[in-house]
Structure formats: C-alpha cells, structure tokens
Length: 169
Image 1 (cartoon, rainbow, N blue to C red):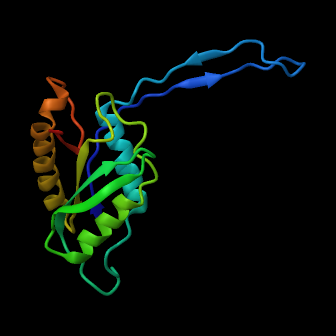
Image 2 (cartoon, helix red, strand yellow; image 1 turned 135 degrees about the vertical axis):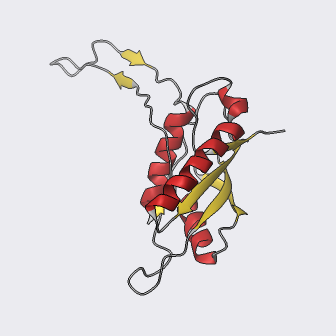
C-alpha cells in the first residue's frame, strides 16, 4: 500500500469565444487563471505521482517493505520533471527505484505555483507502509516537516503543501 499526503485546494480558468450562427466569433471573453496555490499544485502532483506508481514488489508472494523515500527534482521548461535524483533512501532499492520512476513519468508540473520558476528544486516524500497506525504516525511527522520546510514560501499561511521546496541560492 502506498501512502502519501496532499492538501486540497483548486484553481480554474476559462477561455472561450462564442460563435454566431454564421460561424464568426462574436466576442472574446478571456479569464486568466491565477497560478495554482502551492497546496493545490502539490495535490495535483501527488495525484499524478500516484497514477504512475507501481508496486515495487509482487505483493502476492512477498511482504511489502516499508519506508519513506525522498526524491529531489526540478521542472524543465516543458514542464517535465528534470534532474530526478534520490534525496534520501528508504533503505530498500525497490521502493527507491519505484518512486524515482514514478516522479520521472509525471507528465507535467505546469502550471507552477506563483513565485516558483524552473530553477526551483522540489523534494517529494513517499511513504510505503503496511500498517494504518504506522502510516498515520508517519504522515503526521511528514506534515510537520513540510510545514517547517515550506515556511519561507508560505509566510504565515495556515496550510502547506506536502512537496517541500528547496530555496534557490
């Protein structure tokens, strides 16, 4: 079982051009979407990461190993994850490889949250747990760590993202 955390929020935008019966555009109304919040972006990235994650072991014949994997990555100009590297091992190469492979396969990190650019580095932590009690305890620790590590970005915000940001410079 793969456990991860994310905090929900949403941002949406709309661009449309009503067409008349003659097929010509009558007017154009543009609504520009605000960049997503860090929490909304984090939730979307975790959702994409979850879709890409594959069980690192054959769960029918092996006991699922446990641990927390931390992977550091950037965002290329095209939005694809770049410079994907193991930041902290779980102690099990299968968990580490599965997490790195899933991060590498995320289709896009665009649009990025406000104040973040392509030079920013990100750290995602993925918890592999085989017990609900252990998972809850570890998630609370991970949430506290994310709040602390993202404090420079949030500057007093009440919620944070699960993906940690590594300050540039």
